[in-house]
Image (cartoon, rainbow, N blue to C red):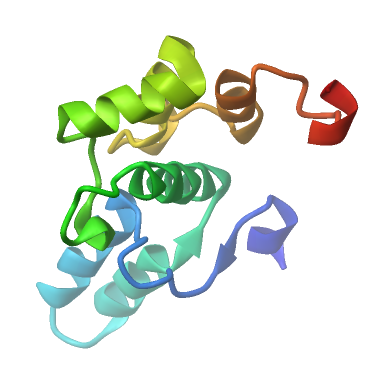
Length: 133
């Protein structure tokens, strides 16, 4: 139970929502024959952590702001002025910065979920949305 005890667990990511670290470990697994190294790489590819949850949340928000994209499920970065302007209109510059940081390739470079929430919502994550109005 050691992995779950620190807020991490093994499971498959939702298709097209796999974080960069998961894709890295899948490539590693594909590069080695079956055996302990492959099993380890596959286990690491399935590891879900708080930074991977932050990444997936940011990806969902970005894709919701990507209406002009023909295939929004392929969007992983802010690629257009329309996306940029939509995010700034909804969340301000602090939200744009937090969303960009949350999509960082390196998990340690991502904000916490509370930091992302505060930047996007401008409020206290301990209060419900209705209480802040």
